[in-house]
Image (cartoon, rainbow over all chains, first blue to last red; front, side):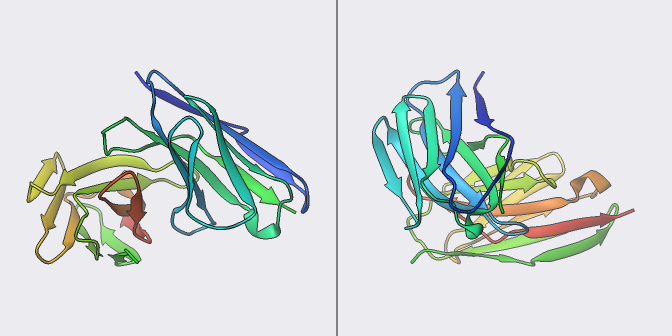
Length: 112
Length: 110
C-alpha cells in the first residue's frame, strides 16, 4: 500500500531564516505531487504541483520554491522566511491518471 | 477564475440529526468532486467522492449528490455522531489540480 511521509512534524524558525520541508511517497511510481499551505483556521491553498521529475508548476508567486529531485520526493524551500509563511504545510499525492489525492501528516511551521 | 463556494461556514446539529453541506462551482470542465474531513490538527481525509457521470453516491451514513446542470453538489450526513465533528472541505477537479471550498465547521452536540 502507499504511504506518504513528511518531516519535520513541527518547526519553529526565525524570520529571515531558510526553510526546507521534505515529502516522500512509498508504494507507487510516478505520482503527481502537491504542496498546500493552510493558515490557522483557514482553507487549503495550493502552492506547487508536479506531474514528474523536474516538472514544477507554481500556483502562487511568493518567496517559496519547490523541487522534485527524485520520482517520489518533493521538497519545499525558502531562502528567507516571512512571518506570513507560518502555517500547516501539507504534501499530497495522486496516482497517474487518478483523481484522488491523499495527504501527508503535515508540517506545522511557526515563524517568529 | 474558477472558484468553489461552500455553505454554511459553521453548522451545529444535535446528535442523531442530519447535516447537509453545499458547494457551488463555476468551472464547467470539473468532473470529479471529493469531500474531505479534517479533524483538529490532523490531515484532511478523503471520505467520499463522486464523478460527473453519477448523480448520487452513498457510503453508510454519508452521501453526496451532484447536479451538474446547476453546478452544485452536497454532502449529507445522517444520524450524526460526536465523532463527526470536524471541518469538511469540498473540492472540484477537471485535471491535476483541485479547487477547494472554504470549509464547514460541523459541531455535533451530544
